[in-house]
Amino acid sequence: MTEIPAIAPAVATAYVRNWMTPSPFANPIFVALDTPDLGRARDLADAVRPYVGGLKVGLEFLTAQGPSGAAEIVSLGLPVFADVKFHDIPNTVAGAAREIARLGISLFNIHASGGIAMMRAAKQAAAETNPQMKVIGVTVLTSLTDGDLAVVGQSPPARAQVERLARLAQASGLDGVVCSPREIGIVRRACGPAFLVVTPGIRPAGAALADQRRVMSPAQAIAAGADILVIGRPITAAADPGEAARVIAEEVARAPAA
Ligand code: C5P
Image (cartoon, rainbow, N blue to C red):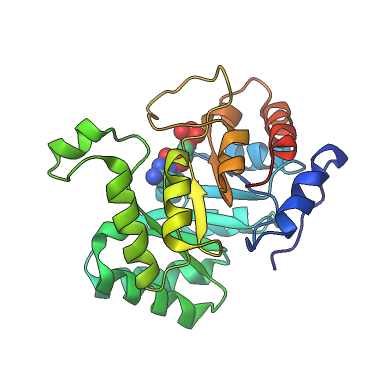
């Protein structure tokens, strides 16, 4: 079980609710530190840490800051999700999985469309380094519409592709998937309650969509059964990121359980 970080009393109920679910991540809010700058990432993490359950570092941060930057974020003491979306031949992805698992992170992701052999190789390699490591399959990016899928030769609708890839990820031994909040129900029905569902594309009422398309509010995503909400710009682009995180944490705390 992941250690529970110190929390504001107002959001404590969300933690209690989630202790009763199979999710190992007690507070579902992971903030996406999408910046190339280590100081900015640390400042954001410090501002949001009373209200969130984890931090997410992705391609922008890791490309700029590398493993030492990741180690700095891990040292802050919250669970860290490395959003690396590996997609290559099985041997190469296994090598990358082995290395990323050394960084002290709690979970990372790979593209489920890379296929069964790639997913199995990644899970096995990560487990050799850290048996607790969660490996998550990316289904369909939340920025893609049904029309975008057709353009790249995948059959719409997105929800059918998400279900297919979630079943494949589970059959390949992965711990969960990333999908849009609108597909949480489909994945839960297909893969059961213990399979982790990680959802970006979270937008509180009134927030800008930016490049996201298949979105939901934090409360709706929790009510639908998400384990982890990956939230970036609604928190990081706010004038006061700590206050934005607090407001979202309270919304999540009030959301009815799935
Ligand atoms: O700023 P925003 O809330 O849209 O950030 C969402 C985060 O989730 C980004 O870091 C993005 O890379 C990530 N993500 C996503 N869609 C996926 C997987 C990860 O938007 N399918």
